[in-house]
Image (cartoon, rainbow, N blue to C red; front, side, top):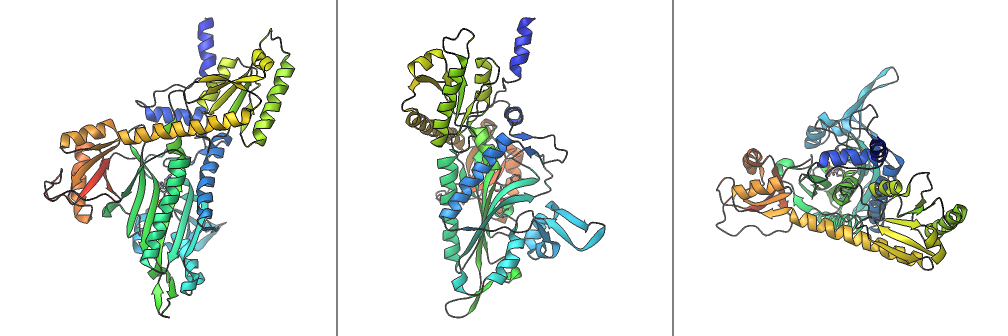
Length: 496
Ligand code: PR8
C-alpha cells in the first residue's frame, strides 16, 4: 500500500512519455506539467500562457526584437482591427485570408457600416499608412516591426503554440526603392533569423522556397524555415516573403525616384510566432521533460538546500547560505530560484528536471562546511563539486556548455532527418522515419502541383519547396514522381 502511495505522490511531479514514439502526448503533457500554457480557456485555439511559459515566450520575442533593433528596424504599434475595405484591396491576399478572419460586426448594439477584421497579419493595416508616409526615395527604405497578437480562424486541428487562433507574432514590413535593395533586405533578415534561431535558441531547419501553389497570400515568392519536430513532422517556424510591387499598387505606395519619376515601392515582410518556442520545447526536451537553453529559461539555476533531519549545520544557516548564493547569482545576471518547499529533495529534483532548469545546485551540510555546492547539469546529470568562491564564473561556463551541447544535439538531429532519395521506396522510408526526403522533381511552378498530389498519396507528405541556394539536378536526371526531366531537388515532408 505504501508503495502505491509513493508512486501516486511522485506522479504529481514525475513527467513521463516517450518523446520520439509518442511526441503528441509528450508535447501536450509537458505544456501542462511544466506550466507553460493552460488549455482550459474555453475558446478553441486560445490557450492561456502561464507565468513560466509566458516568460519563455517573451524571451524568444525579445531576442528577435533585439536583432531587428540592431538592424535599425524600428518598432511601431498598429491597431488590432482592420477595415474590410483595406483587406479587400489586394486580391490574392483577401483570397487567402478572407475566410481566416474573425470579424467584428457590431459596436455595442449598432451594426458597423464596414466590418472590421481582427488582424490576421498586418500588411493591409500598415500599407494603408505607408502610402501616406512615403513621398520620395529619401523616405526609403522604410523598415518597421511590431510584436503583437494576430488572429486566424484556423480550421485544422489546433495545438498550443503550434497552431493557435490568437497567435503571438513578430512581423517586419519594409519598403525599398529597388528590387535589389528589397532582396538584400531579405538576406539580412535571414542572417538575423539564423543568429537568433541557430545561435541563441539552438534549433535548426531548412530555408525552403515554397512551391508556387503554396506561397503566402499576396507574395511574389515565399521562403520559410521548416524545422523537423521529434514526431518527424515539420513545422514552418519562419515565413519571409518578397512582395514585389503587388501590394504597392493597390495601396498606392509610390515614391519619386532620383530622376524625379514616380515609382511603386518594392516590399518585403517576414514574421515568426510562438512556433519558435514550440520548436525549442520539442527539439531540446527529453523523456524527463523540458531542457532549456539559457536564453529562454525562466531560471538558470535552482538551489535545493538539503535540510536533513540530523543535519550538523542548522537549517537556518543552510537557508541563509542559499539566500546569499542566490543574491550573488542574481546580481551577476544568473536567474535563480531557491526551492525551500517542504518536499523530499528527490521530488524537487524530478520537478526541476521536468521544468528544464539547466543547473541544479544542492547545498547540504557537508557542502556548507567545505564552502561548496554540488552542481548537477540537466543535460547529462553530470555532478561535480563547485567551490563557492568563484561560483559565478563556474556557472557561466556551465551555462555556455549547456547551450553548446543542446545546440550540437539539435543540429545532429536535424541532419539525421534530411534523407537523399533516389527511389520511391527510399522516399517512403525516409518519410516514415521522419523529416525531409530530398527528391529530384520536375517543377515547383504551378505545373508541378499535379505531382504533389501523387507525392501525398505515396507518403502522406507534401512538396515543401526547394532549398535556397541549391544547384539544380544534373542534365538527364528524371523526376522521381513523373519521370519527366527533373528541374529541381524538392524537399518532401509531412507537416503540422
Ligand atoms: C505572414 N505577414 O503573416 P506567415 N499558429 C502559430 N503560428 C503561426 C500560425 C498559427 N495559426 N500561422 C502562422 N504562424 C507575413 C510575414 C507578416 C509577417 C507562424 O507570414 O503567414 C508561422 O511560423 O508565414 C509563419 O511562418 C509565421 O507565423 C508568419 O506567418
